Length: 227
Image (tube, rainbow, N blue to C red; front, side, top):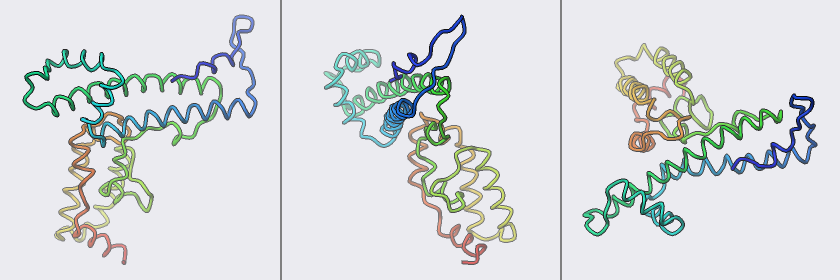
């Protein structure tokens, strides 16, 4: 949640805001609080994509039974006549989980603004949330030895196009054709799996996450890298 103590570090002086200088200990405490909160948001984003929704439903039912019942009514689910209770439980869990994520994303925006107002410098990696698709094999193939793949469409397009241009002399190679297909598939679905989108399309995300780089593509890349 938004750190309630942070606003108290700012005073009003003659009708204008005057920033109180934060000592090293105060700054560290606020940073740690921010990082814990960001971690909680990231965990929920990941849980939505990789967690077992039936188990998540059970957690919600144990901690927030009234919310579960209200959601079931809203979705028109009646477990007394349900023919697929696990699917219905998953649907309820997903709605509640996505609602929680949206609430926390709004809180994070306020938290980010508060950190800026207090002149607490944050690195981009401390602020950014990702859905984790950048660590899948298809993305890391374009990562140029980094542990994760591209985070922006522009970065991906530029580097993928450079690779295709560099391999163009082997355009008839089976690996080149498969590389073109892989690049086109990622570009076509970018809006659904954008690494910086906290709520990507689950099915598209999971399918790409499981996809492997074809051996023909690896062989082509090895040929041009001299390996």
